[in-house]
Image (cartoon, rainbow, N blue to C red; front, side):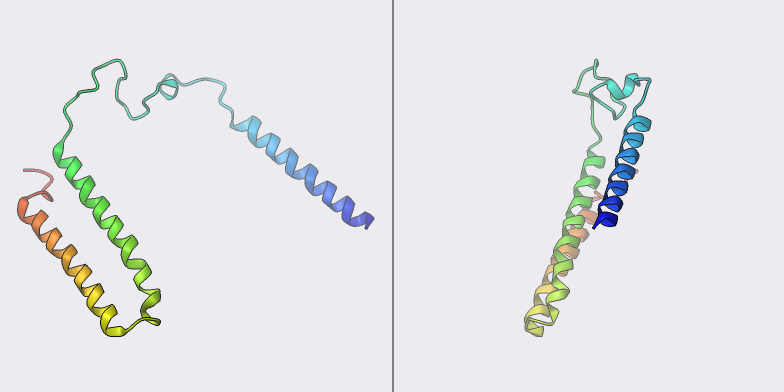
Length: 117
């Protein structure tokens, strides 16, 4: 009982010392002017916020988000392959992928995937 109490106190002391050292060493002594500003992305907060924005960059970002969500929707389909009807599972997955491919073809046809033109 006494050895367990001794071991717990040593663990508590060591973890406290490590946390205190980490908090002391991680503090910056010099405050960076750019980090103190509300915008850390390179925009000057004193200038106008209505600067022109590249529409192509916005479209590429939206397409990336669509395909990112697509991956999040396809991943849960894999574990349910064993518990569902194989024909229904196949049709739904193929339909989902075909819809995505038609969307990709449409974006490609419209020229949204061409970064420089």
